Image (tube, rainbow, N blue to C red; front, side, top):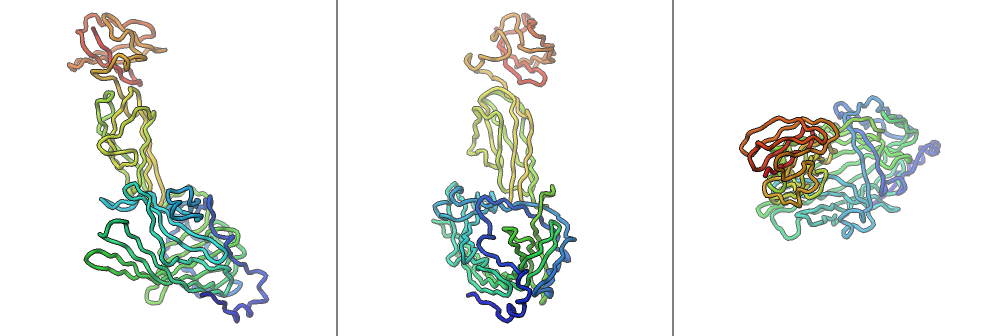
Length: 434
């Protein structure tokens, strides 16, 4: 239900011209990309006593410790359009969980209309199948219009269960109480907003993990202070915390901000290793091993991407893929890791060197830089300037060479067989000596 504290409104009528009203028009919309910074919550006081009309809040001393972006998209641009028609989604994680219970591509979905902004459910992929978990009682985050003195109470209920399995489910239920307890101006490190309202929210909920053995309830009581401006579609400042012995203790601070180059301290750091850096076409399997910290989602990119095979049940989204290369050349490898706090990437240029191997067909050898190939007494290397190189037989013997433009290399005294020519800073190639 929703009602107004009429007496408070009348008492502040003389100052009404400075007040604002928050409506659906001030909520996030599809294609919004809104940057915010996080700050240390230590010692932050949302000034619970500083409530009422024509107040001034000063949080200019907050120091950003990290930064991220709220990104909102239309539901029909996600894999979950069937479940959340005409709603907006916000990606919350690339990957969540471990072992056999790994959920990918997680989105939270919201509805915004003239009366409410509410959470509708969660979209996720399990075993490659897009699925959804919906609120059976929607969580009404705001009820409109929002004016100073307004108050509303609503309930919510959400159940998460994987279709077809009964191992576990997750139930979240509770009550949300909003009170618009102040209006005035606020200063953050980003800017001063001359007209804002403050919404104080108390969320009293119980999270329950339900298994075949038992139901384990976990009570959660959360207090949230949000300052809303008609100039922004996200809170200009949000302070979240809990009540301890009657006192508010902040544990999260976010404020609208411009780009400052900072990343969240919980953002992942990308790193990987590979078991070898050279091998032969369609012969060697390269094992890439993730060494990232705090990673949950993984995307590998190998360029050029011609005739690359992921094997042993892996793909370019696997944490530790296995790869076979079907063409000779130098390959650059990139890894992007992500989690709900951001993403990071790393690139190794010309990391993998692939040469033709024994059994390579004459058709595959066409276009190689060694000619003639097979060769009898001499071979040449197509190059524009002298190149240091080695030639190595399969018996392990090796000889240093200088490859000159158009100048034949004498191999008349080499035994017939297969040799690897390894030019400096260029792909290794196979030379067949007749």
